[in-house]
Length: 146
Image 1 (cartoon, rainbow, N blue to C red):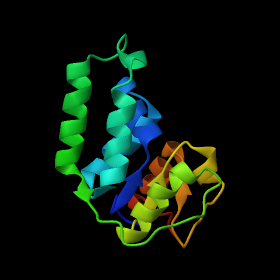
Image 2 (tube, rainbow, N blue to C red; image 1 turned 180 degrees about the horizontal axis):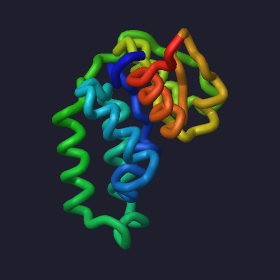
Image 3 (tube, rainbow, N blue to C red; image 1 turned 60 degrees about the vertical axis):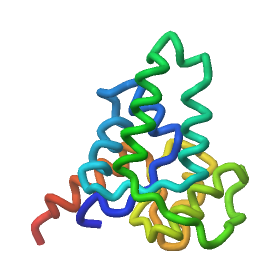
């Protein structure tokens, strides 16, 4: 993978991006966004919206900032229609990220979710942590000399 092309970033990583803008998760999301090819679906955006409207986030980020974050992400994501249902993850709520990766021909799924990470690689799609994604990108930009 030579660029941050067609990446799926799961909800927990996106939430971490908002809550901790200097975190490893934030750097990974920013790298994926730099490629301009962050993938989303109606279902993944619905989940993100539902999670970020929870009152437990009120002490950390204003509701207005959370709405703006969702609006901005929706504007930069390539929304992909899901063409095939997948039943592969031990947590069926995470299958939506696999469906999105297939439909959008993702180069990677970035997640901190162990239920997804255990599938790595899945259908030739790397499923990696934010730190692993950053390392993959650094390696692609600066390959070791032969």
